[in-house]
Length: 160
Length: 160
Length: 160
Length: 160
Image (cartoon, rainbow over all chains, first blue to last red; front, top):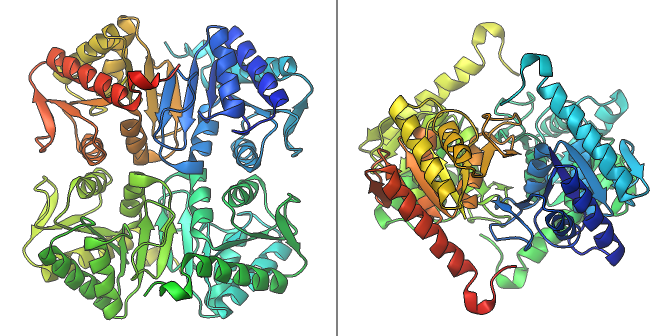
């Protein structure tokens, strides 16, 4: 189960706290935190996940090393086009605050049918607005499990 | 001068008319129409440009041939990531109506500092709302010329 | 008809001359020269095409303006991944000399079934080695026309 | 330490065996196996890594689920352009046999200065030919550690 946490690289202290809680809870639900690999909300989600013993993946716009809480580093070297890869790779998406980059990720997610759960983010039709990280993570985990089940129905055996 | 016209592949008759007028006017201003290469608003803008003797480029998500009004076909094979290439390639952007794909392009444009002029499109801070295609094209042409000048200042000789 | 000319950004004087002749001949055959948009072989092919009144497209790795002989500039911002877009966009490929970047383009072309004609380039099975630019262009033009016909068979009406 | 194992999706039984041994040894050296996520050599390397308790990442050309031995799935939806992301993400590369797709990855790696160790693969200048998977993995691990050290010199504190 891969859940993307998206938001600004230069977020507020409150957004950092929210994203860290979200990352912690995703890891607690055995989910992998996927993100854009940089600072702010991305770093916070990874930091929270690592504190809970979880796994983190950063899909970077450049070919650097990203934030210090990444287990795996995908160096796209593709700038903002990495936003599309991040969304494609996620089973569901949690948006925390966010600027235009986040908006582009929300739009790609909705375009490609990925569920998006928002915490004080862009008010776009299709985003499910949540009031607390617990709510967003619960819904994102449930949506991710449904998405996985529809890809690997149990009666067909599923993947190994 | 490369001006992107963005909007849905399955647009309304009114949006088609608006995009066709915009394409016609861009060509009349010696601009090249860049688009996502498919139908709807993309096709309309190219059709209008060809009627005015202009040049058109389609930056396709797939590796096909796109709509019948393309002079040049860029076959990215990269799905929605082509939206980023389209915006990167444009000196300014005109959005006509639009769904989530268009929203992603608007967001990338604003993220990367490209001016966006809107005709009945998403109401996002940073988009300059216009009431008629003439207004949008005039502003987009002026913005594109400014963008070119700032890249190739005349006192430095500019490009050949 | 879009024909890619590929080769090093820092080529020899002889390769520059060869690529310029190839570009000139492609334009004389009503083909569009597609290239990676930078210097060396890429610039030479565009320069030759412009001298013959042809059209040129540069598919850049960055978001700059490329060489001075480009009619259209596709700013991918995707580094070496633009090699794949260039090959996807071409009906056939001419390789002049070349380093590892050129080798990657040859490999992608052969992987995706695009014909490759070589002038003093990598000796890879599948590349058709030519001795002069006239030969390479003649064969590349013929291959491009066949590729277009197979996509738009005349009995089906083809595209407009 | 991220080590890419590259090769054909439809490999020989001998190549499968070789790739599986390589994956097993990479995991035994605490390396993460990165691959293109599909069958053949890619699957074998992941299977070997999982048997040794290691971690695997598949960087897919499509948006599917890849082979059954992937811990993390990066769904690029970018076709052969994913080859560039795979090479960018690797600290060093091991090539097992291989067709044109593998050749493109070798070329990109050499273009961008990544060390490549080959097992019965393309004979390209710059590829270090190895006779057994043990040799290739030992050298790839050493090269990856050097690459990491040069990015995070110990006197600067390195990453957290």
